[in-house]
Length: 391
Image 1 (cartoon, rainbow, N blue to C red):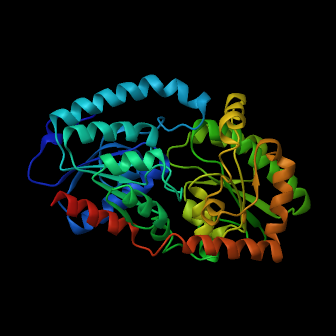
Image 2 (tube, one colour; image 1 turned 135 degrees about the horizontal axis):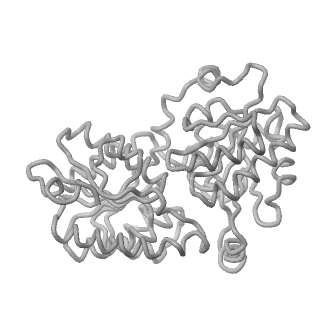
Image 3 (cartoon, rainbow, N blue to C red; image 1 turned 45 degrees about the vertical axis):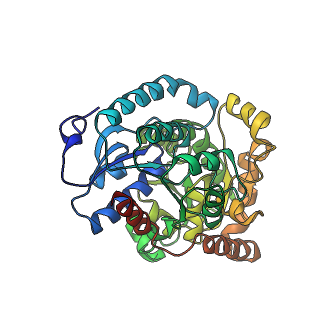
């Protein structure tokens, strides 16, 4: 732990908020919530487990969350000892230094366990982006949240209703992705920011920032675009490199497979400039939806991850793209497992680049999905929940 532990963590007077966000998306959502709290209560002091976005927002970083996030058995198993050590360390800290409010953001495999301890200590808690919030029916995580969390802040209306039906205190706050992209640049401005030539057809490449995503998904997406370039030679890949990504590893793959590609950390400009996208599943598909960017979604991993998917997830997961999950129908092509090849991704992408019915139909579906996210202002609503809970 850093200097945030100890004397600073026990400072008195100001509102003290402990935060725990282990995923890159949770780090971004948390940073926006911190900024919203500070706009209403400038003296509020945040500290805890976070990444670069929350650190830039002024959170005192006790533990760097980079490297803790994992998807799939193969990438998760090596992190288990670290996570157990982290859990024990945070338990000791919370026991010795009671914050005014504990804010847990996503990262359910860790944060749901931490929530039990927070509840045992009698601390006030807000769980932001609760697990399984996309489900419209009661689930085990919803039952635990209803019992243990002081407040639940969820991005989906039905999720709040489920937790309330189970006796919990939940509020539909909306999704902060709407606020993040509210002031996005125009297409022309974004192309200028990224130095995209006027004659180019920019395509977003969104592989994610986890080590295994860069290793397995990025080559798949770039190989698909290499095939697409044979049909549309003006295609120019715009590759997203998240702040928690291993940029050297990412650029090594890009330089090998697509040396013309532009690599950037500015996802807002990247999506604003792009004609279409090839993307991994997850929160980033909502970012593309808010920007109205047609996309093809995939996911790839190790042989063990594929085995896990076929044995445990294939029958339970109807969709992997957030817009499809929200609408309960496929508006975004999903190409996974045997269909997750460069050839299949290329064939699904090409009709979305040219102006025509496939492109227009998906954009209409994306707009419909975005409507389900509610009005802007999610971060401010979460901020007011935190301040209200603190009294």
